[in-house]
Amino acid sequence: MTEAEVWHLNYSIAFNNRALEEDRALLQMAYDQLRRHHQELNIRRKAISARQSIEYLTKKFIPDIQEEIAMIERLIEIRKLQLTGLTYEEAEAFLEAGASERQLELFG
Image: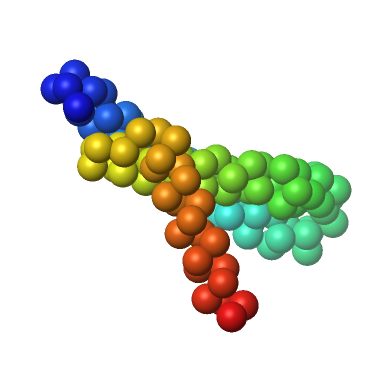
């Protein structure tokens, strides 16, 4: 692995860690907003808006952010494995094999 490739992988890990922190902060803000909207349900005039926001947060925003966090975490793990000399495909297969083993342990 060349020095440039190592630099690129380290940069990618750092970049994705920052993105992960930002997404986790967004997720926390969404949960805080969701909590506030649940509290607002008791106030009649705000109830309609609160219900709409609750529906959007629970059905769209929060699941999307959670999915993005999972994808970024996976990419970071792949990049870390690439630093050990694996190709992207090998690292991905390694993670898949680990996930399959964890599933077998849970159900075995």
